Length: 116
Image (tube, rainbow, N blue to C red; front, side, top):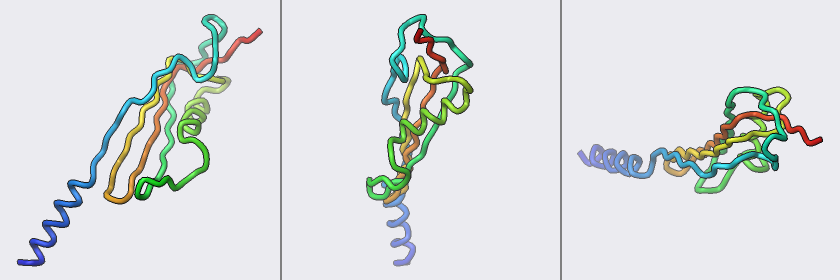
């Protein structure tokens, strides 16, 4: 019986300390400075994502910004694009007790600038 109560206590603590949350963090006009009419839309809305493993809140993984890697991932899906307009950045955090997985998602319309 003591083992069952101990297991139930550990299971309850695990449920309290785990979860998932999604939060929109940033809405931006564009990923690079552009003027209205000085760009060409090159495709439909694209999405890029990057995930980072964190232990006790400290990031383990690739150097650099997850947001920049997610932006590069989105631009890779639209050949010829050099930026995004109508861009949104969302963060999703999956909390698994001591380990967290943070996913950065960027969506936007791909463009090619006409800076002439």
